[in-house]
Image 1 (cartoon, one colour):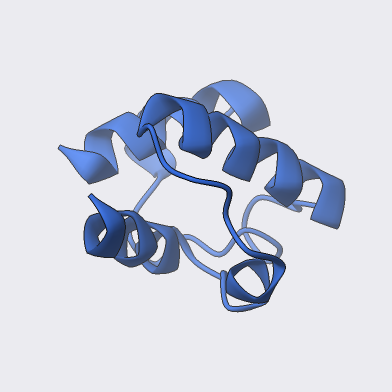
Image 2 (tube, rainbow, N blue to C red):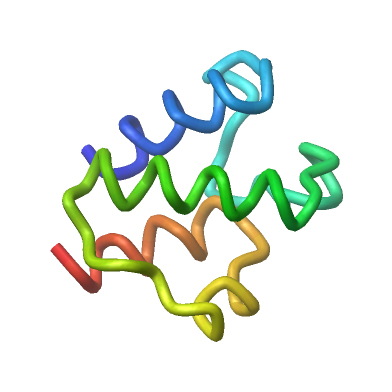
Length: 76
């Protein structure tokens, strides 16, 4: 459930097919994400998953889709 929702958000923001997104998809290496892209995604995640503000130090640990899935799963 978390992965599917997250993949849909990523697909929309980065204009890639949901089928291309895996737990190992790297935001910078595979999606060419900038730090601004990641912040925008985190804001969407906060809203979609009804999370409190994601801390800056947590953002530094986010490299792959799996990292984000684990972060979300730990908080819901």
